[in-house]
Amino acid sequence: MSNRVAIFIDGSNLYHSLKNNFKRVDLNFAEFTKKLTGARHLIRTYYYNVLQDAAQKFDGSREQQEFLETLRKTPYLELRLGNTKLSQGIPVERGIDVMLATDLLYFAANNSYDIAILVSGDSDFGYTLGVVKNMGKHIEVAYFDNAASRDLLNSADFLHPLDTKFFTGLWTTGVRQYAHRRKAPRYRKINAVPVINAAGTGEQITPQDQPPAPDSPISPAE
Image: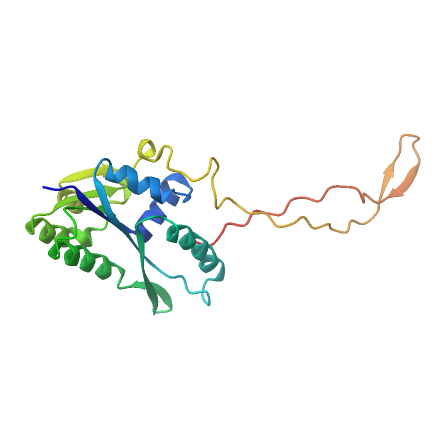
């Protein structure tokens, strides 16, 4: 068998797993896919996710656009973006799993890869992986232990545990991006209060030079 690799990334699963496990998402995707591929030949990486609706979640949409711009600069990575629909007033993903499963099958049927690496823990892909294996392809799954279906893992020929050791050296910065942000300090008016000075006489002072208390940090929208 040849060593042509195609990587299929469930973007939502990866994003939330990174936040839950490492409290950061500044992943260097070029190095991430390189580590998954190893000495083999990477054909292409496909990244699947939904676009945030700016009308519903402006901050989340802006942050996602910045993130997607970074992905677009990653060599041999293609974005597959879907939309959301409202279900009882709650936005839900529409068709992302179907897109990923369809591409897995389509590229296997066209002999575009020899080995598929799925980055996900979603059990819904289990049957698709079985069909791809029946086409003579090898299946590998990269997963977070606390966000993976055992049925999905049992469908793989090889597993890549995504743990602390795996991500060593794969972050884009030495500190966490998307950390809590602070507003600019605002000065509050403080009324004059009587105090007793060293001489024992009362006088009115206004603590104008008193530094303002910092505002509470604001967490960025997902």
